[in-house]
Image 1 (spheres, rainbow, N blue to C red):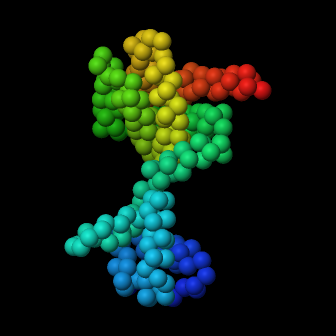
Image 2: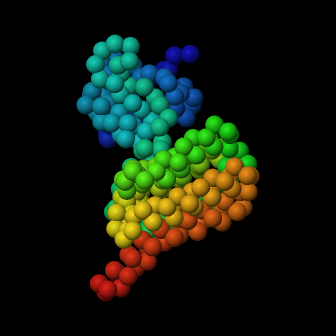
Image 3: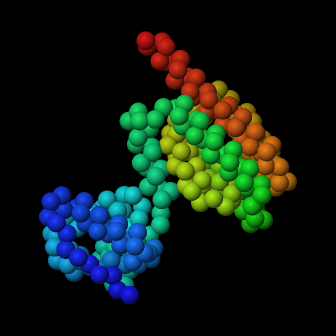
Length: 248
């Protein structure tokens, strides 16, 4: 059944456009994969200017529910998508930088999320997911891996395990929380006095974590990932607290 569009009020126009689109998503009239009408058609139907419509579409792109392809052809225009990971990661990273959340808040959120995801992954992980996780661990253990690549692989490993847990929301939140502190963790790794030893120690824990998940030992994996997170992330918290005390 075609979507029925109605004109919106003119005050705070782009917010009203957002509300109109949101209502159609909530009603099930718009789903992931659906395309919105072209701007030249949708703007007059809604009774708004094309600039107001574009502003609303940019907001939807930012929050990860729409992708806009410029130009002409079958792939051009705006399409409803489901892409929450990047959007939530960007949002959380900005709020963390602005001081909305402390390092302690992020640490505790990581602990809760990753304990849950590792324990669940031990029950639900597939052989294919195990193979992919193992490939990440193997690459992290190679001597030519530098700090930035190791940090990327480390992030991918933790997010991959969360996805293997079977809980999409846990996966998305884990990705967002880990991404919010990626720059700080990268800096901490770069400042390590003995990088090869640091990398080897971290990856030994990755290897053990993967072994526990593979063996279905979820409780032990949960305990180990908490120690793993607190050993590095907790150091960042301690360092920040020390600087605060020195400045006060």
